[in-house]
Length: 344
Ligand SMILES: [Zn+2]
Image (cartoon, rainbow, N blue to C red):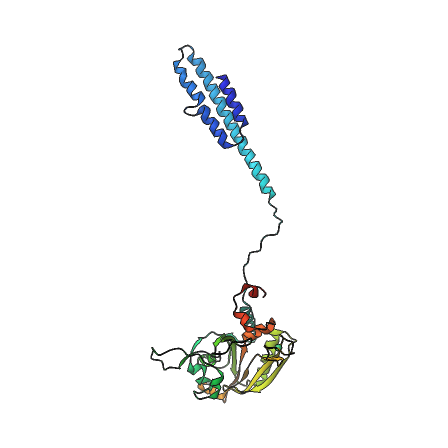
């Protein structure tokens, strides 16, 4: 009996993990354990010996159980210590791995900048449909069906043959100017609105033209709005967006919905004015066509052209982005390649 106790205790003290401790427990105290079997045999002993052997067996059993409990505690403490050491090994000062959270597309960035600048001038931003009627895109803007200027706006028509709509009446808008009528019909002067959005034309795609392009249309109607107000607005806005050092020039031009019409050119920042494919070798890039709103347009939306006047403009947003970042090709803006987008 004492020998069993000694063997068990020395085995228990030698263990260093829970599993072998469990095995020893089974070997001595389990159903067929050495001590268990011995205790069972006590009943076979002569009567006078039983109490003494029984007492001894209980002592041995208790000693083994106590040793197991103590050793169990020690093993747990050891494991904890080891884990503690491992925890201390974590170097919390090591630089982490930066998660790639992405950022706004350069087009979105500049659009937000444009909206912010116009907000400071009291302009509200409006949104409108890309699928547009011929009326808002052309007719209302003083461009009747037979007007030659329609030829310069290669139009994409929607197939309406299966509907009641007259063929040719529903188009993809070719200019955000279509928003002028939509908004002015609803609001009486004074009006100050910008309408950013996508336009579509059936055009040959090259470095500075796309079949879809972003514009920010803007217009202001009030009493006594003059051409000089337009010049001042364009000058202020472009300098806010592109920097105070930019060079601008204005030239007269003709758009049916303005009178007079002006074109704004910005010194080409891609080539620094030396001439490149982006500015068609001229050193200047057309950036903001504008003009005083034609009286016919004011009449069409129900305004009194004798009492109010206004100006309208369109900013070529894609062109603004390419000039700001000195990109030599507009097509990069619609390229999903992350190696391009990560540069902004
Ligand atoms: Zn250039």
